[in-house]
Image (cartoon, rainbow, N blue to C red; front, side):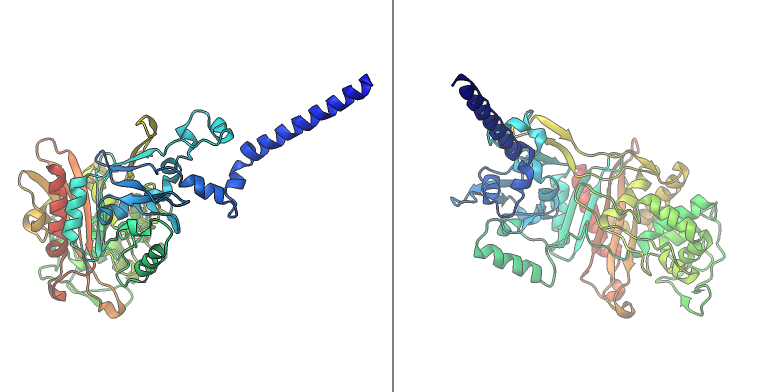
Length: 484
């Protein structure tokens, strides 16, 4: 009898141990797999059972949560939703997440293991820590200035701090209110269809995800390539470039939008934005040299994150000389995001050093305790400081004596480059108006901000559209807001 009792007890103990092991396997080891199963509604219910963490701008939350009283209890709310939509993105119970709401979803939803010292214990007792907070680098005054400047016109504005890489403003227009996508009712489905079917595509983040022909603002890159390669040693020395200039191996003449471009030096060509000179310089530098310079600025980079993914800006590496000539003036198939062109301006302002941009300053738990700093990358050399100094001089003259006068700010050194980009079949589309610029402190020459502006539907006659007229005042307002 005693032996039978022992065997029964041992067998019962083994069954209990097996049950405990299986419970640990289900609740801890394989918890993620079960939680991610589409048939598991508990995960969704738990996800929305508590308020979502906040995204902060200037130390203040621009997101919140409201109690809907439903099974998926808490829905996302947004303060000044259209203003910050290109930064936050949306968090929808029906359509998921985008932008910062997506890249920082674990922190905001409270599922990131960094929010608790013992994540395995929280899983075992089915406890979820409160959502953390994501503090952005955005300057609210600069963000508002950019949003008001575009005034609903299609386009984008990006401002960065040259030394640190902090993104100070990130605006895409027209925008939308991400709050209409919160929840899971019929109104959400209707809003989704309406926004995605709109002709002006308000959900497209034009600052990060849209590439444009950069037009004449790309001449900053071409000028850097010409100076770095030694093709141009004296910016005032006349160059042997006629007006018009015949594209290599073709009979096609390339002209200029202004007079006075025949046989001028780089200084005058930059101020007058002479297509002929920069097309010829691009051919002189060569495809390899132009591509290498563009890539140092960030073109053809397919892994850029801020942490939201950024569409790659492109400079073709397989072209004939005529195509290279057009690419050197920002046409053919050269394409850039507004963020990329802000990076170009920032590298010039920062004496040839480029610090990759980032949008998250730091991540904290709900109590404000630091969980992780923002992702920062090492500064890299784009060009020699002497080259950057020459480009600073050329860009300053554009603002002081050229087409960029609308960006001048009293008491500060401002450099800029205007541009118009042809597009459409036969270049018949209304040209995009570009302006890239930077502002430096006159006393210590500290670069304070670099800005890129693109306006798709500038309200002007085709012949009168220019970056200085349409985009320059916006850049001035953004830079000025940062100075205040």
